[in-house]
Amino acid sequence: MSITTPRCDVEKSERESRQRDKPIGDILLWPLACRSRDASHRRYLSLEDLDMNLAAVTLAAHILILVAVMIRVILRPHREPASRIAWLVVIVSLPIFGILVYILLGETSIGRRRVARMREVIKGLPPITTAGGDSRPEVPEKYQHLFDVGHSISGFAAVGGNAANLLKDSNATIDSMVADIDAAEDHVHLIFYIWLSDNNGCKIIEALKRAAARGVMCRAMADGLGSRDLIKSPHWKGMSDAGVDVAVALPIGNPLLRPFFGRIDLRNHRKILVIDGHITYCGSQNCADSEFRVKPKYAPWVDAVMRFEGPIAKQNQYVFASDWMASVDENLDERLRAPMPEAKGNVLASVVATGPTIRYSAMPEMFESLLYAARRDLVISSPYYVPNESLQDALCAAAYRGVDTTIIFPARNDSWIVAAASRSYYADLLAAGVKIHEYVGGLLHTKSLTMDGEVSLIGSANMDRRSFELNYENSILFADKVLTEELRARQQTYLASSTEVTVDDVAKWPLRRRLWNNTIAMLGPVL
Picture 1 (cartoon, rainbow, N blue to C red):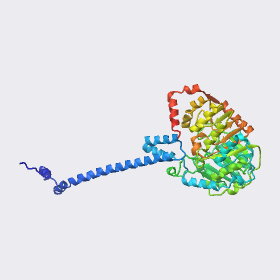
Picture 2 (picture 1 turned 30 degrees about the vertical axis):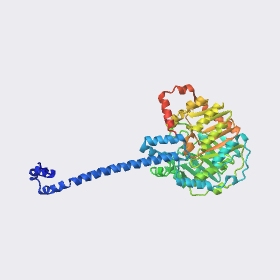
Picture 3 (picture 1 turned 180 degrees about the vertical axis):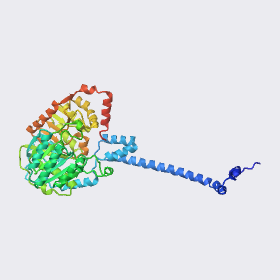
Picture 4 (picture 1 turned 135 degrees about the vertical axis):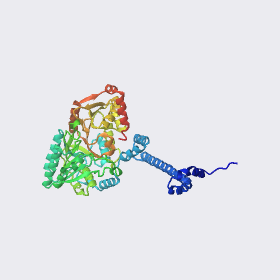
C-alpha cells in the first residue's frame, strides 16, 4: 500500500537544505505561501474574469452606440435614401471612425439654441406685405408658378418697380458699393461670407468708417469661418472703434466643442448689402480682390453681381435683419416697418433666401422649377456641381425635350473633391444633350441661370449639396427681357473663354479617372 505524501510537504523537504542559508524570515513565511497558493490562484482567475467582463461590457456598449447611430441615420427626417445608405456604409465599415465622422458631419444643425433663436426672430418679424405701400404687380401667368415657389420658401412675393444693372467685374462692384456707402444718409447693412483685409476688403472697411463718422448707422456682419482672419485682425476692432456695429455670423467658439452643439462647417454663405433701404446688391462675389490671396493659384475669381434699386431692397433688408437679430440682441422691427421704397424701374423680382432652418429642399426646388419651366433655352454657370438625383434628372429632362441646355463649370476647381464629383455626372448630361463647357480664364465663381431670354436667377447658391442642405444662401429671381439679355451676354463671355467637353472626350478618360470620379460622387451624400 502506497502512501501519498502531500505535495506541500514534499516541496518542503526538498527545499529544506536550500532554506538553511536563507534568512529566518523567509523560512517562517514559507508555510503561509503554501497556504495562500490556492487563494492567489482564485484571485488571478477573478482578475481574468473581470477583464473578460469588462471586454464584454465594452463590446456591448459599442454595439448599442452603433445601433443607436444607425437608427438615427434611418429615422432622421429630410434625408434621401442614397444619403442614408452612404452613411450606413461608412458607419458599419468604419465602426469607431464612422461614428465620429457622423457626429461631426452627419447632422445639418446649427445647434438647438441657434435654431430656436432664428425661428423666434423670423416669427417675430413684421409682415412685409403690410410694411408699406407696396402694390402687387401683375405677374405673367406663364411665370407665376416660379414666383409662387420663391414665395413659399421665403415669404417674399414678386415686387415690381425695380431698376437693376449688371456690374462689369469684381473691382467695379467694390467701387460701386463704396460709392453708395459714401452717399448713404441713413444706414448701411452688409453681410459677407468671406471678407478679406486685402485692397477691396479695406476699401469697404474705410467706406464704413467714413459713413459712421458722419452719423450713418452702419451694421457689418461676417461669417465666423469664412472671415475668421479679418475678425481676428485689427481691422475688425478698428471698425468697431470707429462706430461701426460689427457681428459674427455663426461664431465657432471652441472648435473642439463646437461639433457637440452644431456643425462647424454649416455657414452663412450670403452676400448682401442694403443702403438706406432702397439700394441692394446680390451676386456671387465675396468682399475681396479677384486675385483672392487665400487661394491665389486659381485666380482670378470671376464673379457676377447686380445692383438693384427699388422695392426689392426691402426684401434683402428682411434677410439681413433675420441674420443680425439672430446673432445680436437688437430689434430692427422699426427699420423693417419703414415705407416701401419708391419704384425705380420695371423689373419684376423677388428674393429667395434659403438655409438649414428654412424648408428642406427649398433651393433645389427653385432650381428644378426653372429647369422644368424652360421651353427654348437654358444657360447655367456654377462653380460647384454636386446635385441630388432630382436636379440631375431635371437638367437631363430639359435637354431631352429639346431645350437648348448649356452649363459652364470652371476647368480648374479649388475643391478637388467637387471637381471629381462634378465630372462623374458628365456622361449622363452629355447623353441627354446637355452642352458642357469648362471655363479656362480663372475660377468661374458666378452662380447664374438664364431661361428663355426672359427669366433669370442670380445669387450665392451653388448647384451642390452644401447650398441645398447646409449653407444660408440668398438669390434674386427676376423676370425682365433686357436684364436677362444683359446677364446672358455675360454668360456668353464665359463661353468664349471655355472649352467644350464632348462625349468623345469623356469616353477617352482612363479607367482610373472614371473610377476616381464615381467613387467620390458616391460619397456626395456624406461630403
